[in-house]
Amino acid sequence: MTAPLRIGFIPLVDAAALIVAVDKGFAAAEGLEVELVREVSWSNVRDKLNIGLFDAAHLLAPVAIASSLGLGHVKVPIAAPFNLGINGNAITVSPALHAALMEEIDGDRFDPLATAKALARVVAKRRKAGADPLTFGMTFPFSTHNYQLRFWMAAAGVDPDEDVRLVVLPPPYMVDSLANGHVDAFCVGAPWNSIAVDLGIGHILHFVSDILAHAAEKVLALRQVWADKNPDVVASLVRAAVKAAEFIEHPENRTEAARSWRSRSGSASMPKSSSAPSRDASRFRRTAPFARAAATFWWDARKQGAPIRSRPPGSMRRWCAGGRRR
Amino acid sequence: MSAEQSPKIVIVDESPIRAAILEEGLREAGFTQIVHIREMQSLLARIYAVDPDIILIDLENPSRDVLEAMFQVSRAVKRPIAMFVDQSDSSSIQASVEAGVSAYIVDGLRKERIKPILDLCVSRFNAFAKLQEELERTKSQLEDRKVIEKAKGILMKVKGLTEDEAYVLLRSTAMREKKKIGEIAQSIITASEMLK
Image (cartoon, rainbow over all chains, first blue to last red; front, top):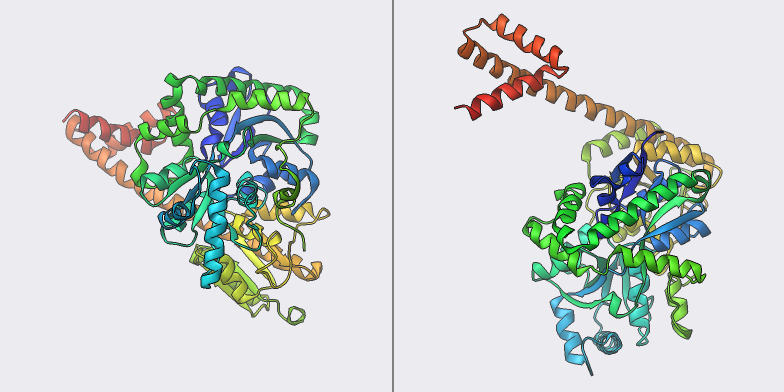
């Protein structure tokens, strides 16, 4: 037994496989001693993984790619042997924006293209009236949330860089920012969308799984150099995470998984109004399909040499690369 | 450029005490233009309003991710901002991350001008952490003393011991159980409340 593995995570529901792997003994059964370290920002997770303060991390899939390419930061090749979840994000809008979209909608309100077209009309009207551009919150420049918002609105011709404002907000600030009007909408993972709905300050417009199927969300990230040196540890860690994901998948285990997640995530990150554990359990259901399906997808995708994201067609592609360079 | 005289430094920190310690250090080192931002709402707008050369932010602050967006969004930014960290300076990055502080620097500011600022941040952040640790330790010692007094009182009453005898009993039990005397005292209080 060597020194314990330090694994960084952000208190989001899709860290559950790692948390359960430790708390339910799946990691220990693989002979791994793991110290889970809660972090407050993706920048911290990335930096601490890069410089070796963490051996592994719960990381946004696009950050793993950006880090490997040296985009926006130091170039550190990252290995992602396990996908901690697919999808799980949603686009939530303020009641005012929801009403404006519903007024403009032509077609099925569950159809993302119909809502995007409605958004284009709302944006045009606001511009005509001289109103400020709509502001959308997302979690990080290199995040699925950023790309998914861009993908959705660009489909109807809304230019994400010109027609609206996209701003980074830490997930725990999303709900407050929507409530006090600093943003008109946001794209974030669980549990924040449900919390906005529970508090009556937001409407979930779309689950992103309705827009993009099988979008890789968070990955188990390791430094490539470290992974190459420690293949046995990597294999053990992946096995533990797979077993944890299987555990979470059983409905009868969800309450227990939610409890474990909650105690690791800290009550400080949750508004008091949503403290009932049963409601956390219901959030777990809402974010299904969970990690095992994701893992399967990941391995299948790797076997086929597929890219991590399904690629948007033609003209939308440039917006999905994370902002245009000027 | 004014940065050649005294660079404008923004400190983003929700802890007023730590920010004051850092600001004091920077002023002593001859940096005169320092602005402390405590309010995280509309953080980027506040930063653009100051138009700094250097931004220092503590790593406990979730708004660090907001700063990362500065490199991507170019419309609202007056000039490009790049992170200090470059491939060649990993020891500096490690020291600052361990101390809990991160720096964002306007492109073009010379590296040798930044190093002393970052070193100063690291030492002040470490000093603050040490202060906080001492405070915590003192607090818990005070708390322990209160608990021990109470447990002694219970032992004296229930077992008819003198104060010294009660303390000796607590201490020998703690040694035998390999626990802190405060923990033994706490379990006596808990037990006596349950048996009431």
